Amino acid sequence: MHNTLILETEFTSADGTGAAVLVDFMPLRGGRVSSHLVRLVIGKRGSVPMRTELIIRFGYGGWVPWATRSESGDLIAIAGPDMVLLRTPVELRGEQMTTVGDFVVSAGQRVPFVLTYAPSHLPLPEPIDVDASLRSTKEFWQAWANAGRTPQRHPGIVVRSLITLKALTYAPHGGIIAAPTTSLPEQLGGSRNWNYRFCWLRDATLTLLSLMNAGYYDEARAWRDWLLRAAAGSPEQIQIMYGVTGKRWLAEREVPWLDGYENSKKPVRIGNAAADQLQLDVYGEVMDALHQARAGGLQYLAAAWEFQRSLLGHLESVWRTPDDGIWEVRGERRHFTHSKVMAWVAFDRAIKSVESFGLEGPLEHWRRIRAEIHEEVCRRAFNTNLGAFAQAYDSDLLDASALLIPQVGFLPADDARVQGTVAAIERRLLRGGFMLRYDTAATEDGLPPGEGAFLPSSFWLADAYVLSGRTADAQRLFDRLVGLCNDVGLLAEEYDIAAQRLLGNFPQAFSHIALVNTAFNIGDATKPCEQRSGHKRLGAAAKRARPLREPAAASLGTEINEIPAKSAQ
Image (cartoon, rainbow, N blue to C red):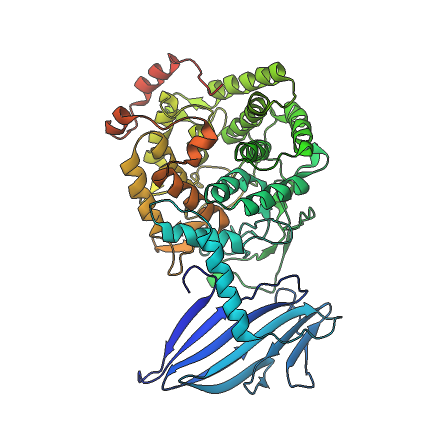
């Protein structure tokens, strides 16, 4: 249904004489303890025979519940603390630990199924009015969608992405999970199967900008407040991800009785061990997000600045440390370029906060640290043979995260080192027109090689084109990426180029955040890449220039060595 989270699926009988529509939706909880999933079958013409089948298992499929009937004939299934209740006028029966029912829907007939979850120790939830719930759910989503603003290019798909982000938000706390699924593989048959039902600090700034630029300040404020609560505490204990309520204990476990998706290798995982990794880039993300919140006009919180200063005090002592990096590798820690760049961002945003908002802080001290980080990254991360910033210090490998260097303001887009990096990444990491994160066969990340193209980094390439003045290239790439959305406008994390299908956990918030921001970068006066970097995109002369290509390594290296380090200071 247009601009809602209501799904309509039409079924037609084999002879074409009968048709029915299946309407799926979840009414707003509205403070209730219980939650509902509604399936409403509506007859359109003729008669359509249909069958319902329900298999209830708790504990990731491990626990068979005890099923009984209420006085009114509703099905009740209980296992420990959990209860599921099914209400429907269809006559149900049990078959081999499964609940089934056969019925016929005729034109004009409406057959509801309401599946309700509630804690098992509470009284049975009251029934809901299905038709009234459908109307109120439709009205809520369409009013919410119409309240925002969209860019000129692909406005419909941008609205769908924003609705998806809203749907991934836990309303009582404001946290936005990365995806509602776990263990959907990044390569069919592979073992890169992760649990993404958590909130990553890494997504903070881009999430904030996508919401604010679309006009959703209440959601942006809720996300900012969730970020402060989740990360609060001792700075050395900050995690890269948290539970949707801010929970910190995310121990990774395997579910051995479940097979992998489409015969992919086990394990199926719950929890995520990456929560215990050291990833220095999250300090920069938190500092940047809170700076952008102030710049965007969100209400100032004095406690936020004190928290930020404590983060910087800890970062000052650890930024030289090797870490696990943006891709959460499970191999040896390294001095990842992106991690160091984001450490620079942390101090840069603190300086800008003092300069722009009159906050108190040791300005000259922070400037010295910022300059030290910048000099070290330019000296150790830039590979003259590649003519590009490498994945890590003293490395010969490339990484798509280097595309963020101009977007975060570390160097402007017209710096020859940035142009060389974009060109080298285009040449070596593009596959079928889409971007790999890095070469998994060459990088020691502690896992078997192989995965799909990473969709957020493909959007980053389009953003790099925008900052470089290559608007036509950005538009073409953006249009191709939008074309990967499925029939209801959703994206996963990755894309299998050979099989031409989406891969990984689904729908993926990071992909939709990137889509929204790139849409604004291409088709709107307010561009997130300029907001974040502090740089305007290149002028008309640069737009008319030919697309960047990777020059010979020797000549590029000679040229780069003559250029002094330049930053947005």
